[in-house]
Length: 296
Image (cartoon, rainbow, N blue to C red):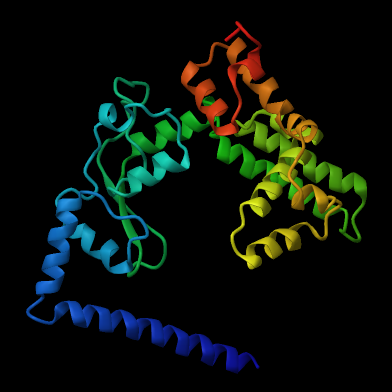
């Protein structure tokens, strides 16, 4: 059986390599004119297209703009300044590992700005070459610890921790005391990394997990997607009706309670208004809901 699996993997890899070789062969026909045409197109795009092919990711390195430093004034215009998935992907599409450091920031000026090539995504032959430097790495490492965490990242951590809590109910040969200790350490570690403590209470974790799974189920477009959501909660104690039925007003209020408490704390700490606005937009909350009429 093991030998059959190895043979299948080997054959599958051979097929994939064959397809890539054929693709390159087609591009090379006609004196490489097709490659030249595609490189010319990429040069004009000045941005790697979404869902780019392996070929595009290889050819884009032949352009003059790939990996060049970005203008922070242009990049951050009308954007909330944090290391969220949108900012990261925008940097990746032009060959940068990180978004640009905000204009005028000098706390990390002693770090080198000499770019190095960082290959990610697989083996050296099929990975993407992103450019970065020590100053960017130091800045963003500190930024993530000292600035508000993007909303989608908070939710990801909540679902991860609550999923572990729910799964722990089925753990064998481990005491509840040890389970509680493990989960407590996980929460403490999350807080040390900048996740808000309001998001890590028992109620916040539970209702964020429910809201996330409900959203996944309600937004599914294929039967397989709905089954995947139901499968992910079948070993938990969550009532499936909370996932398959739309949440009512009281349940939504429970799911939003920690968000309102968190936003009020940020406002009290005079956090930049752009973060408050971005959170409220992401969470579909109005200023009246959070701060009350006339207190925004």
